[in-house]
Structure formats: C-alpha cells, structure tokens
Length: 68
Image (cartoon, rainbow, N blue to C red; front, side, top):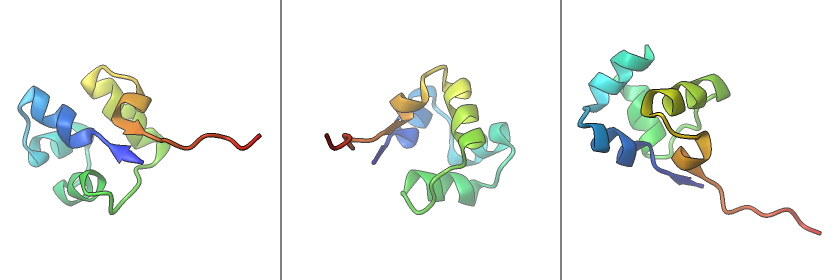
C-alpha cells in the first residue's frame, strides 16, 4: 500500500507535531503512519482525509485487485 500522508502534510506546510495536534494523536503516531510502521484505524484515516479535504483512497493507495 502506498501511503501519501507525508505528501499531503507537506503540501499544507505542517510539521508532524502540528498534524498530530490537529488529529489529537502523538507525533510518534503520525511518524509511524508516514513510515508504514502503523496502519491507522478507520476513524483516524477518516480524520486525516477530512483534515486534508481528500478521499481516503488519495491518502492510502492500495494496488490490490480481487481475484476472479
């Protein structure tokens, strides 16, 4: 899965600490999400999408395709 959280965070000019503050999580959580060490919960993914005004699939790109 391609994670684009860092890309969107940098687009708005926020530090990891600022993003963490706005989300109500720790900076370490933001770092873990950005470095693919932690997959965010659905509520956190939805908050991220709302904060950046994008769809969740613009933050987390999954190349998986169902088998037929």
